[in-house]
Image (cartoon, rainbow, N blue to C red; front, side, top):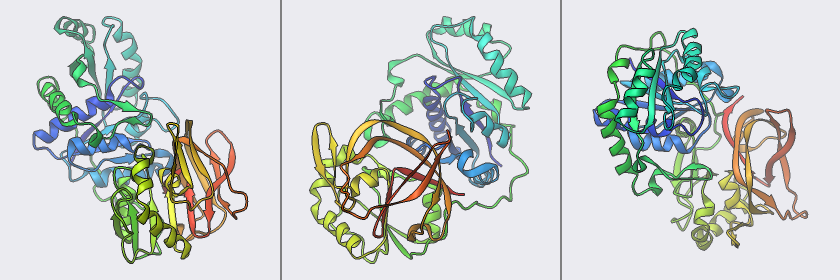
Amino acid sequence: MAKGFIISAPKSGEGKTLVTLGILKLFTKKGLKVQPFKVGPDFIDPKWHAYASKRSSYNLDLFSMGKERLKALFYYKAKEADFAIVEGVMGLFDGKYSSFDVAKLLRIPVVLVVDTFGVAESLPYMVKGFSEKVKKAGLPFYLFLNRVSSEKHLLRLERALKKYPIAGYLFRKKEYELPSRHLGLFLPEHVKEAEEVLSIIAEELEKSFDISLFETLDFSGFDDLPLPSFFPEIPFKRIGLAFDEAFNFYYPHLLEEFKRKAEVVFFSPLRDRSLPSEAEALFFGGGYPELFAEILMKNKSLLRDIKDFFEEGRPLYAECGGLIYLSKGLYWEDRFYPMAGIFPFEIRKKGLTLGYRKIVLCERHPFFNGLKSFFAHEFHYSDIIAFDEKVDLKRIFKVYTQDGKKFFEGFRYKNALATYTHFLAKA
């Protein structure tokens, strides 16, 4: 049975992702089976988890999964591992569906990563509140000291924090940093130093991280929970799914369920010149089409194939980056890039749109097979412009936000459906 803990912090930017990756790399290096998880909807951090641990990382999202499905997914995936390590989101107590809520539900210890740069004897007064609330919930509490300035600084911190168990520490070094951009970290395949950085951190953690603190903390009582379902039954036998550097935002638990319910054939909009044969439907996930816009634009034979597929009335479904790809084109960095031209609008760069969504379908679509409602998440830096009002474009999603707003989205044109939302789970 697996052991495990959640890695959180007082706020974003304290270094919990870097610490999580270093621990995953260290445990994997030691030959341990370590199963990573990420609290909330996030495509990028789990890709780094998978890179460090050589195992798929699964999202744990209370909003869309609810308590029972979240527990079932966690314990089903964790039971074959030596350790299950959960990376939190934002600060430990932040949000309606916080990392602390997940820790309490799963009954796992909390490791609080604190950025110690520029602080020493003041730190216990901040830590005290976190420790008391965690211990009141009956959970073990540990500290991880990040960005320690020197050996002398470490001694001061250890003296000041002697009431609290310290799981480990990292010194402040420039070479520990990973580059980021507007959606978060770069993907690991885009960072040539990724392996070197994670190996260096793992070497440091081998000296400073006390794994023995967690070796006796087993999960219990959840061995027989079945794998939960999040997606409706799929009415297609064979689905073509866009997957490459431009389109790779797919939640692992959903992709695995997809594969259990249909034959999934991957194709690359960047490299393939034609669609997979005998595909009954196409799925375009999110990603970074704006970074590969010129290559996508020049692959005209595949764009023609997709347009023909659409004109034949066969189903297409596109999320976020997929919506961009199926539009008339994208304005990016002072240039216009023509795309598939299925949807009668263009895309431009804009500020961040972010939030949970509850979606009610106003009419049936083949991809959702009679599903009436589902939970989703929106996260993008682009917007739709230049609608062609002559085209009979329907909006078949009635969208409810967490702050009480309602609007219509889910653009349907014939049998093609595109949305800025990312499907999380059936309601």
